[in-house]
Image 1 (tube, rainbow, N blue to C red):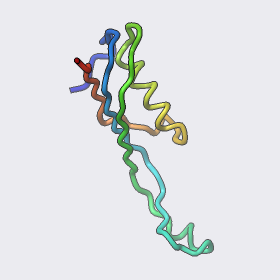
Image 2 (image 1 turned 180 degrees about the horizontal axis):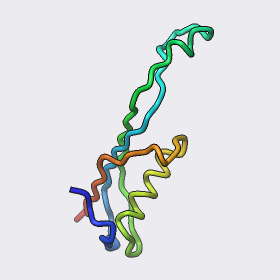
Image 3 (image 1 turned 30 degrees about the vertical axis):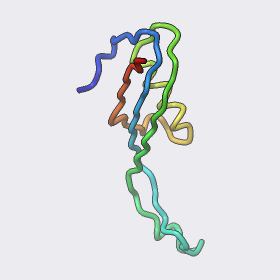
Length: 93
């Protein structure tokens, strides 16, 4: 279930997992240059990103998600990106 856009995340150490999908074009490997346009196929690409970060102040969950989307999709028009998963887990000692 998607989190509320108004959810505030408290400071702490967090693990995160993010999955995004976006339209792309696939050209099979070893396609000669003169055939690349005709061999191109529309497809959907998926990226899985995970890591850990230390949050030092209260921030909206949506702002954290958007930060990681921008960071991981800097080569993609963000209007085309669909976030399919964003999980935050507080790391406890």
